[in-house]
Amino acid sequence: MRVHVVEDDAGVSDSLALILRNLGHEVISYSDAESLFRAGMPEPADAVIVDLSLPGIPGAQLVRWLLGLAAPPRVVVITGQSQGFIDHQLRGLKPSWLVRKPLDVEAITRALPVG
Amino acid sequence: MKDFSASPEPHGAPTVSEARLLSVLDTAADGIIVIDERARILIFNKACEQMFGIRAAEAVGQNVKIVMPIEYAADHDEYVGSYIRTGVKKIIGIGREVRGRHADGTVFPLELSVGEAATPDGRQFIGILRDLRPRKESEQRLADLQSELVHLARVSAIDEMGAAIAHELNQPLTALMLYLQAIRRAHSRGIDIVTVAGDILDKAAGEAERAGHIIQRMRQFVEKRDPERHVRQLDPLIDEAIDLTLLGQRHRIRIDRQQAPRLPPVSVDPVQVQQIVVNLVRNAIEAAAGTGDPAIVIRTREHEGSVILEVEDNGPGIAPEALAKLFEAFASSKRRGMGLGLAISRTIAQNHGGDLLVDPGGHGRGACFSLVLPAVTASSEIG
Image (cartoon, rainbow over the protein chains, first blue to last red):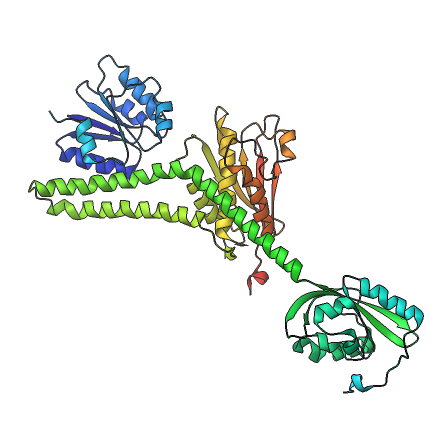
């Protein structure tokens, strides 16, 4: 599966890319929502991993845009924020999966089943 | 040197008016000692008997040295003699803190003011003494209380920051876990990882270090300790404090950081000063958050022997009715948390010989807080 990772933290982004490739995925990394928009629209078969706390356009807004596409990709939200913050940000949005940090490989495989 | 105590008694029995004077002096709460110009005790009131553990009957006629610690006593005759010769006043009419000695050997602080009277029998010196121990104790209690308050405010700040810190720690922990799991997976599948393992382990170690730094910064901030003074440049302290404040900060905000070149250093408790900066920056961020384009300016400059930090927001300013109570503890209009912040920040600034000032702004201007700290000059830096 092609996985787009939108995460501004360099360490998290790098390690996530490593493990995803390790799991057999193709990985494209972005440090913010703006660079994903510039790169073009994800395919319906893709997955997009979005960190909720992004510089610039907020993660929740990216999630809203992705889910509003005619053929939305699989959207996985990752966040280290409190439940209150998450609820507030994601009002009415239903991402395919939500994983709270710290992440581990099991959580990622559950969110992105291979095949 | 003459032995004063052996000189002949200049007085006869007390007269009626003298007796009345003595009884009045005995009602005084302060110790009163009258000596002649040879430092011989003429009057030693009841309060003094208590203070020094010597009865008046024993004290009168003796040199006043008997109530002084040895190191003062040795020089006292010379002080009196020097004043009588030169007329230069070292203590008369001034008053100062000195130490007294109780008969049991206890040395204690006392406040001494000395007056002079010309009498038919020659010059006399009237000393009024106040035991400073109770005052010292209450000063100590006050200092303890203040340090407790500073600690409390810091703990309350950390409480609010708790969620932000959890978020911040999550980043390196996530990266660390994923790096290690990547290696573990490759290893268990027999994939050749020799070429990349070192690189990945370095990154993992780097992430663990990053988590450690976050903890360290928080620990420095929250732990209670005695105030310190270090000669430091203010700007690096400010930058560190700004980083701390922005940890997990949810508001998006422009920060314009302006530094004056070649600022003189300041003598500060770095952690306490950073606490003020954190407080000011947090307040500024909150004040600006409601505007369409939140921005704050954090500026350092030098002005008339002081180093000044200014934190200015582009919020609505401070309402006149709030201004009066701004620096009072618990006066904050905020729902929780930093009600103590500004009160304590100002106290800390003043303990550093500086101050915390505010320009309330309003009418389209945001508020601007100024932390003023005395600059350390080359001469004051020595010692």
